[in-house]
Length: 266
Image (cartoon, rainbow, N blue to C red; front, side, top):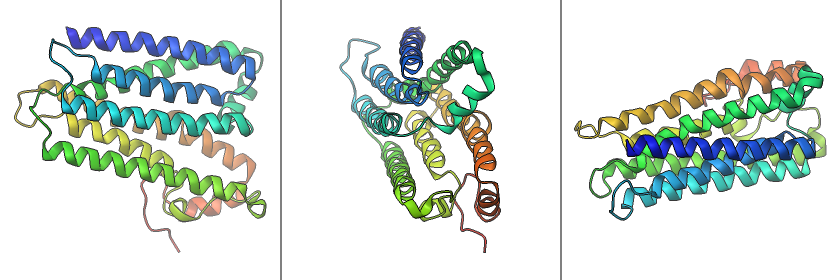
């Protein structure tokens, strides 16, 4: 019951965060701020559900570790997106929705952001289960989870930097980024984002069977994979690429994996 109440409180907080995000994007005309609010909000709520005790005991080492990791994730991703929203043109996904929805854009955008709040609530469940795994102390399994998360965070940061460097070069205007990690995957940033969420089930699952709730953490990576590859990530972005630079993107797509990194085709 305590877990359920904490999860419910987290969901309410995320609805409030995305309500503020709707107001900000409405006044600025920049839909990208919604993603910044979502990242910061999910990071902050994640820290909260990780550290808030379910009994009178102080936070465990696992709670501190998971809180630190999700806080770092939210700060890095939120800051990256906020910088982009403040200094670049509107994200292609939101620009496309603005065009498609026309005069109904703000009404539909509010509903869309509430759906994002719901998505965040589902993802928070993984953090909640990971942090409150009652297994005493930190184990080798926790160490592996930290390794997975760290590698994913470094990979996503590197992919973002490589893309920013490519876009900043005038000679690359109209071209598709196909260097570094982007030669191995068309969306390495999304791949590493998904990999971050794979760490939470490793923290949460107790293979002895004493903490069956930990298996709920697998919903995070499953859901984020579906979201990124089938809904709001890759489909919208690749549709924009097909419209804006069809020949370059077709050649790039023919030799480069859509999601999971692999050696590019000759």
